[in-house]
Image (cartoon, rainbow, N blue to C red):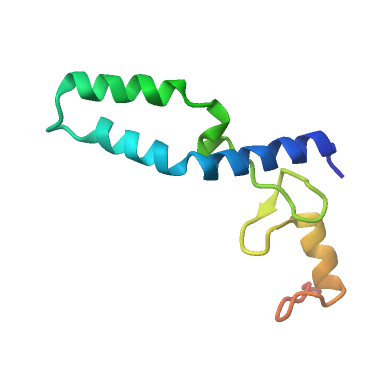
Amino acid sequence: MSKTSSVYRNLKRVKMAAKYANVRSKLKAIINDKNAPEDERFQATLKLAELPRNSSKVRIRNRCKITGRSRSYSRKFGVSRVELRDMASFGEIPGLVKSSW
């Protein structure tokens, strides 16, 4: 189990990224528009820099839904490899079986 502070910090980032998603996308559209005036693009860059760092999607860390483990995360199931193996062994994931030979 990971530290709860790490899990809550990540949840805070998820909420903040959702909150600022529209603002960030509009500013990025202005910045990437090559036909816009250079001064307007520069002002959009400054406004984007003023936004909180945690409002960026790239700062969100994929974490296991059960334990909060950040490493070896499986996107398809939303859990880490450890929990995925346990769930597969107990038959909690339909169609997934632990191989043995």
